[in-house]
Length: 177
Image (cartoon, rainbow, N blue to C red; front, side, top):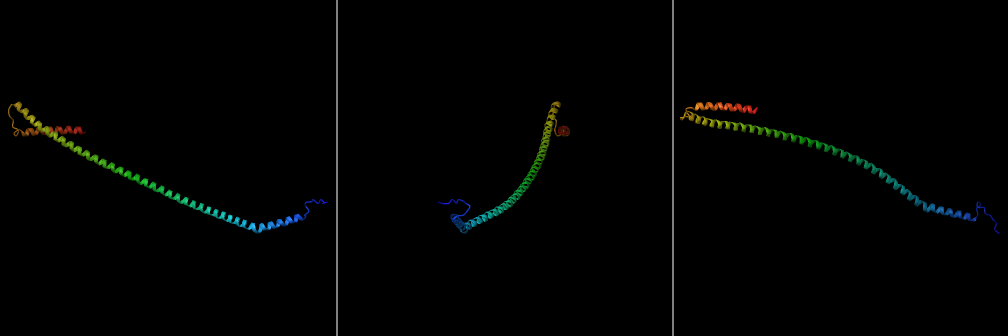
């Protein structure tokens, strides 16, 4: 019969064999498996560290690029404001020049119209004077019943024409007021 030594705390032969096999497996793992794993983990750590440094450098470069871009945008906005201000100034100058040219043209046309009106008035007065002289002679012929010589009575006709002109000038001066 087999004695019942079932106390698991007491080492027996299998335990020692298992323990030795365990130590051999741990030794093999420590010698052959762990160095490549440690090397792979260190390479991965180095890769992660390098990636983090590259990310920090990229972030710093992006921040620098962003600030440069913002500076360029600000400069472009300033240039745009200057261009708009210059365009507004040019437009105001063109408008002022056009207004001045328009006023000059208006003044020129007004002077031309006044001159033309004055000439037309003078022609009308001259025409009326000539017709009035003819009418006066014709009326006098009929009244007197005989021929009146125009050359003899020229002074009388000139005096009547001058009176008529003075009257026409006074009437024209009143109508201009």
